[in-house]
Length: 112
Length: 112
Image (cartoon, rainbow over all chains, first blue to last red; front, side, top):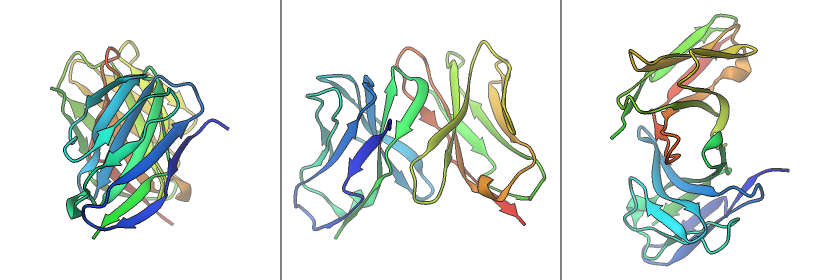
């Protein structure tokens, strides 16, 4: 089944404790992206990658890092999480933007 | 840069009636306009999209219209059903960079 898999689905952590949210797609998509979704603010892009070893900042990159060492994986790293990063996070992938994006099921992160 | 405005933020319609959600965009160079549906607890899912060389596209009960001159596009859902209840997002993009600029979302409520 073609899908984008995010893990974990839910995560509660403490301020300053480094964490990684994994994202993997099995569709051989070049394009991958991370979004955060907050009430009233819609979907905001954090980082995106147009191919292996090619990443760029989205609209809200501060406090986040990404890497794209393999085509299928695009992890999101929070080196020192803060409470304002409490949010619902989505990973998405696309074949060069055509045919739309496939989204993962989301990761609900709470930083206390 | 591109800006996408979406209206209304909430739409309540009687089951069986039609629903229309409207979006306007600012960058006349945008040429790809997808619509996504997000059900509770899930990631957004592409339901229909349109490119700038087409004025209208239909898929069963769903249709999208595009007016390039006025820079607006709309989602039309006919014969609404309870399973249509969700949040709908519009977006706009340039094919060249695959970056989706998102509307803020419309919560569609189907009343029985």
